[in-house]
Structure formats: C-alpha cells, structure tokens
Length: 337
Image (cartoon, rainbow, N blue to C red; front, top):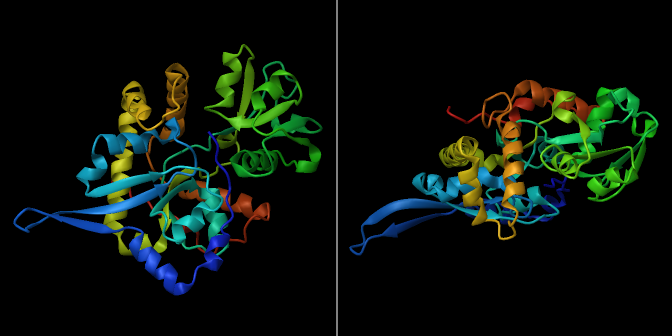
C-alpha cells in the first residue's frame, strides 16, 4: 500500500468560470423514464479518486458498490484508480467528486487555498510504522540517534510518519542518517543495509516475519496522532449537495462494517475489482491486519477533534503549514448524524 503527498498546483491554472462549470458537472444527475415517459428514480453520478492501484485497502468501497449500498442511495459510483500527481487538483478541476487522501494532505492543500473538507476518516489509525529487527539495540525512539533509517524518499506518509516519530522523541532528521531505498524496505532490513525502515503496519511489518525475520515496530499512531486517509470533497459539493455527500459516506461505512464482520466474503468481492489479486492468503492477512486500523477506537468514519489539533500543531512545528485559524472548518462528522 502506498500513500503519497501530492502538490496542488492545478488550481492556479483553472479559470473561475471553468472551475464553476466543472464543479457543477462533477456530480451529475440522470433521470430515467419509463416507456410512457413517466419519470423514474433519479440517479446521481459521482466519482472518487482513490490515488492508487486497485487494492484490498479499498475493500469498504468495493463492498458498498457490489452489495448495492450506493445504488440503493441513488448513487452511481465510479472508482478512479491510479497514482495522480495532483489528486486534490483533479477534484477541484471536476474530475472527481471525492478523493481518498490523508488529513495531513488536506491541511497542506488548504494551506494553498484549496477549498476541500474531510467528511469521513476511514483509516482511524495512521498505518505507518518504524520497523527494526527484533534484536535491535533500538528499544525506544530516543535510541534512533545516530542510526540509519531507510525511507522510500522524502515524501508521502512514510516520511511524514518518520518526522512525527522524531518530533515525538525531540529529535531532528540531522540526528539520524536517512537513506533513500525506494520501496525495498523488506530486503534492505533483512540484509542489514539499514538499521530501521519506515513502512506500513499492514504491509512490510507483516512481510518481514513471514520471511522468518522477526521485527519490532514503533507505530506512529502510538506516539503522534495524525489523521490518515478519508473521504474528502470540495466545500462547494459539501455545502450544495449535503444529502448526497452524507448518503455516500453512510453507504461506504455500511460497506466497511461488512468487511469487518466477514473479511473472507469481502475478499471474494475484492477479486472482481483487483485483476492482479492472485495470492488470496496474503491478501486476507493484509485485510485482517487493516481492520484494526479502520476501527480505531470503534467509531467508524469519525473525525476526532483532538487528533486534528495535535496533527495541526505538528505540521506547523515542521513548517509544513501555517497555523490554522479555525480547524473546525476543515472536517465534519456525518456518520449516523
């Protein structure tokens, strides 16, 4: 699983008139008629940019669509997969009604005057961890000083997660040795090329023990609260199509609850959306490991104000954003409300 920060430069190239037209068409409605011309139910067409290739991490969306939860709410949902350099820009430009991105990405985008809002956080825990061999001398975060840490690069959730861990330990990047290793965390740690790696708690942290290499993890969510991936839309869509937005959130969370209740059945559904899924045993392991990340403290889709505040303070301290005047404008809670 990979989550990356994206620049939001596209907004500056969109004229106000074009922007308005795109926003109005980003979520269109169609009305079917019977043979006699009598209007039938109205269906709203919408899209969500998932920002990555088809993957089991999107199981709640797949289940919601496969079981008809979206259609029952009058929604015709299209999934736009693929890594997009400017996911928020694609939404503002009208390509997507929603995007699936992190709260840290949202605050960075809003800092650049992109009018977006988080309407439901799906990943209740930030799924990033620092991983060390089980016999490592690194017993606490303070022990990282002077050690070599492998990272995919100075971007994305793994890098933000590393900054958060260092921040929690009152360390700076200059206190450690960072080594860019791409997405080779598993072989890099096994070969002792580095002393630790940044990876995902439902990915590399699982793969290493499966290869006979026991590890210990320092989960970011245990040290520095951060808002992970959720459903994000434009302020325009949220304010002008609030009923549709809530319907989409409710249907997705219904799909999420089904995944939690029966991950094996959810995996069967996932197969129809993930053409490359061949190792079902590993996929089920990943899916089961993701469930606690979705659940968090048990409030599916919830936006926790304390976590948002803590994250904002961290991002400001890192000079990644300017102080936010009113953080309550950046997110809402729609689930079961």
